[in-house]
Length: 406
Image 1 (cartoon, one colour):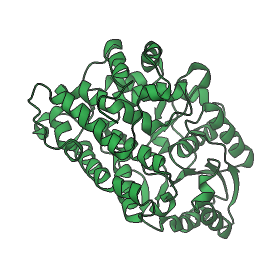
Image 2 (cartoon, helix red, strand yellow):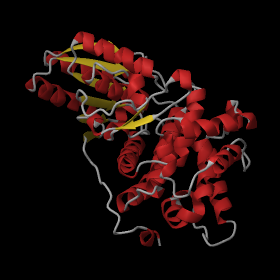
Image 3 (spheres, helix red, strand yellow):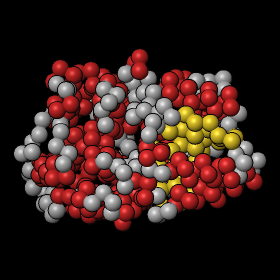
Image 4 (cartoon, one colour):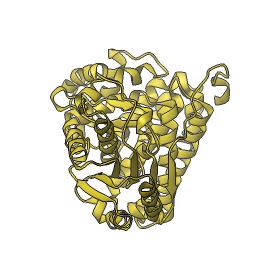
């Protein structure tokens, strides 16, 4: 029984700090947020977003109208890309400072909101830059306030204190975790997510599943992270096929958004470990690589690797995906690995690392990046098993090719 694996003598953090408006039509809550901004004498903001989704989803018109109705001026930074870089963060921060912005609104998925969070730190610490931030040359305690308008059901960044950016010259993709970047308010409106492509729907939801699994099995896990993981995975297993079948199914989008929110709060508490530590080098080397899809490619091999140390928790939270598997059987770890891969393939995520151009020759470099990228060593240290170059390389190798039929 998984409950017996948790130590009641271990003190854990349970953090729930951001006010989130969840539900169809939640975007209209930006009116109330803008009114509160005005009452707090915030009259200039910078909006940080990507190149098109902020308009395509309809979020832009509602946000701009709310700002204009409250006499709040704004400037737009729309250059945030998937796997954002420290240069984009600095560019957004410079624009915000020059304009005199007192608050950052991030509109988009994880990339745009992470760019907004990071820029908020640099705006409040003008003597620093994003490279210093992501190389951990200073520890920020202040950021300008952040409002997040979330457009995907995956990252959970709208509810936590985590952000990610790449440092191109070193092929590093670190993660930062600071209390000062909890969003002030966040909006999770399923109506803004119906334009997600099938691949985006899949990859973002798989991101949420990975957040849940890792948070439930780290050395910092808690009843909250385990129960949140079980609920997250059950919801995704039920509603992701419905959203794929009918992209306009706002009820399915609602539950996937809630699952991602829950998983985001869960890893804000339990943090993450192997899967994210090993995916970051992949998307650092190939910036076009989709984070959630990469996590899915690694997940079966990671679960197999940690199975013996985490089998009670894994059996509990993964039941909607793997069914009833006797965890005491000699081949139970391999069964979990195969069943997770079969589930991903049944949804349409059939690529493995070799399909993305990675080969056995890349394993040594990827393994080195997993240990040398700032912050990833911390994630690896939270794994339920001791991580070394050998077992990291083994996970990469086992993720190159499919174990089951596509």
